[in-house]
Image 1 (tube, rainbow, N blue to C red):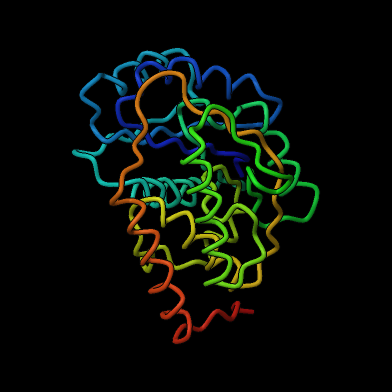
Image 2: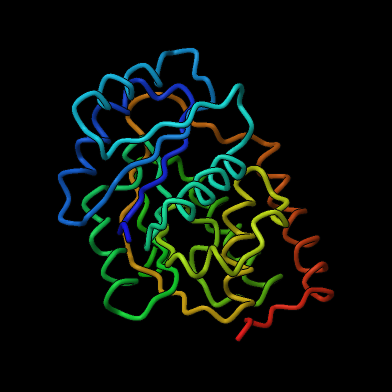
Length: 244
């Protein structure tokens, strides 16, 4: 079987993509990369194609239009399972997730018993660099809100830097995932937690992007706000027993 796949959704990341890919491949883990690009008008996919010419560990899926973060990851998860990868990562393209932290997430799932490892901004205080205070407070408050509604004992419930064992993604019915924006991150954690998988938070320092523009919007925040309540309600009518 293959070992690690790092999935990176992209939309207009030409200023970052040619830097983040080599930084990932230089790490001490047996990793390949899957870029899922939503037909970026800035030519992100063309840069990836050039990098592919000299490296078979780089893979690319281009979608016709901007379809949302959650659906991009679901596309990547299905591809990863078809290709029989053991460990599947979620990661941003903009260096807010430091490639140097990849081995720490890998160690958590490969050697330290985690089924899902989360790169956590809030496991040991608030470790966010270059965000405005208002955004830090909103993000931290959102994680508290999610913990209260769901009951999950996870400090960084909205984190997008993660590593799954393949068995977690095989267990979750990916077709049932409803969230498309950042609520997707919450929903995936919640379902893994409901199934009883071991979730470990690995403290990281999150640094805001230097290049390109953020994809965060008010609509994304509202989806997360109300989506958590709907998700919790649906859970009362869902069977989370693992098949033997």
